[in-house]
Length: 443
Ligand SMILES: [Zn+2]
Image (cartoon, rainbow, N blue to C red; front, side, top):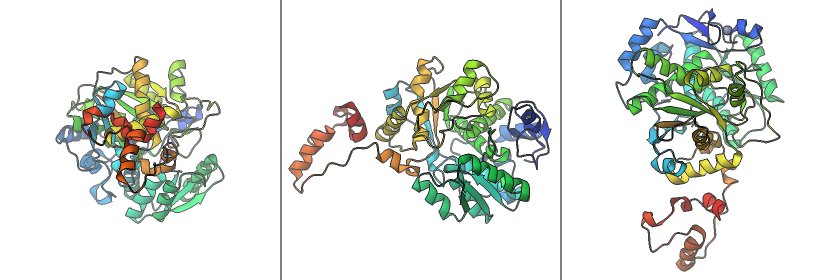
């Protein structure tokens, strides 16, 4: 579908669809940086949503929704991203008091995170708009996704990063042949990226301005597919969706998809959308009623949730919370690590600590009265645990050594793990005991 404009989320000012990636100039001049949104002919959009919506419960990948995306088939660049499983997690749900809990497992994407949807949509759009190179600033998932998709398209990719981030992510970004450059600080990354955009017309995919307003509007269109998929896989809208939120790109994209489905009559209501964040800028903005998200204080705390560990957020995220009546809550490092262990030990899903934040925030949203614990709730798990294994490993006890005799092994199973080798009936064992991290925290 061909876009007709990019429109400001805040003031509605429209810009040409092919050259306005620095956010809304009008709002920026008023000190309120705001992202733009891709706009299509409404009749075409509604017709496509009616045709596609809920036609299948098993979308194969995100391009199942290509008629709702701004790219012609000839320009699609894909590694098979999207179409990730929506899994019921009854044991985890029972443990945290949200029995009808589902998780959208975005760790199954080609580079292990939801950012592949952003990368695929942005690289495809760059081709469609005739751009020769893409540029990003990242120390993690966005960089890996953009690097991989650019490689897939045979398109040069410049990536501004820093030296200080996990080895797995650094390796992933480097191996795809992207032009990696480490800047002194995070802020420097953005300035360098902006210079490349201005001077050479590189297609900017990630956040690159401060205060930031969000990523490329075409890339965010890729995130819409999370919203379509959740509805189609459930055969209807859930009551609530919870995201880990930094800049709120996927949060905003998912909301846009839900509003499109609602306008087309595919769903009769838009779910409440809640944000799980680290330092609380959105919670603070909601509490004060401000329409500008202010930088939050870290209180001297460093976070294990590196992918969403920003003290800032954006108007696009705040707008979703206000429009859906959602709330924002934070979680501590200990709570995130506990949620990460529970997801792994109770359901077999190991995600990045930043993703576990979506689960860690659930009990807090319930206690705040923002989330109905009896409702159908979807937590979006954005990225795999393999992205940052050091953080998880640091929280696990050493593996107990045993001798070559089975008696010692059996005794150790009982003593350390409380597993009775003679009685393997799962109803007689506490599944969390299978995870030494949880066991240690309870003894
Ligand atoms: Zn504006």
